[in-house]
Amino acid sequence: MSLLILGSAAFDSIQTPSDRRERIIGGSAVHAAYAGSFFAPVNLVAVVGDDWPESNTRLLQDKGINTEGLEVRPGAKTLYWSGRYFDNMDDRETLDIQPNVMGSEYVPILPDDYKKTKTVFLANGAPASHLALLEQMDSPSLVVADTMDFYINGQREALDELLTKIDALVVNESEIRLLTGERNLLKAAQKGLNLGPQFLVVKKGENGAMFLSRTALFLLPAYPTTNVIDPTGAGDSFAGALTAYLSEADELNEKTMKNALLYATVTASFNVEGFSLERYQTLSRSDLERRADAFRAMVGF
Ligand code: AMP
Image 1 (cartoon, helix red, strand yellow):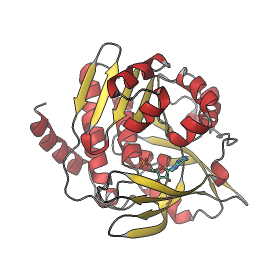
Image 2 (tube, protein in one colour; image 1 turned 180 degrees about the horizontal axis):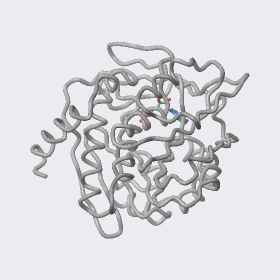
Image 3 (cartoon, rainbow, N blue to C red; image 1 turned 180 degrees about the vertical axis):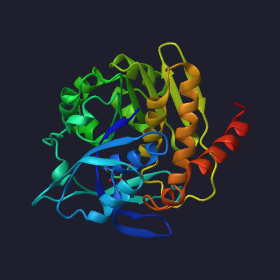
Image 4 (cartoon, rainbow, N blue to C red; image 1 turned 30 degrees about the vertical axis):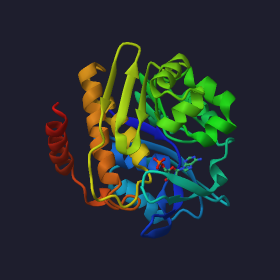
């Protein structure tokens, strides 16, 4: 079964305490699609300007990602994001964000053969664009969304509407606190469920992840890695892998959710071991399985 991923395709400029890169391939949908494609066929939907090099598209196609839904808009510029990581490599500040072609008026164009895709991941992007995509879909059985401070603060009305139309929300700790105005993480997640989704996954960076539905709560630590080079896209990778794993599952029971969380954690742990998609480009499914086995042994699964 395939998975549709809508989000940003971007140029990222990244500074870490020891290194930097300028205008490398990034974006929420790019990270999510690449990570997800280890588990399921991915149909990508995003928009870029004509400054987007063909080699970036080829990089995605070489991984088997369907880029029919990647719109290249003549005369427009691709989203640009720049960020700087602090010494702990977990916290960061945004130095610059230029949505350009990805403004809130972006209406995704869905190729006909994407419309029947059963699982949808709405990676970071304008909630109005997410809603416009859902209107074009036939009847997806699982819709998962991410959001971020930029949209929680700036586009709340559309976001509130979106929350009533999705099955699951995958956000980080500060985002669920900002969304609900609640400091206590569990209370914030519980309030998050009242906004619409059936379940919620809260990403806690190096502290792992929390799953919450109305009947279940479980926690998973992060996979411990000493080799953190660039955490950008770890959250998107996590959500992309999680959703892709779920898209292949026969049933969404507790065991499936736990396995999806485990594979999402392991996939994201590889993402941080290089800038952009660098580490993924040398990664095989058997590398993922080996680390998943080691992780299972660590957490007693
Ligand atoms: P993460 O590290 O998982 O939070 O994701 C970082 C990615 O999100 C980067 O590759 C950015 O290009 C992308 N990004 C940053 N700001 C935005 C935004 N406002 N909308 C969509 N994508 C964004």
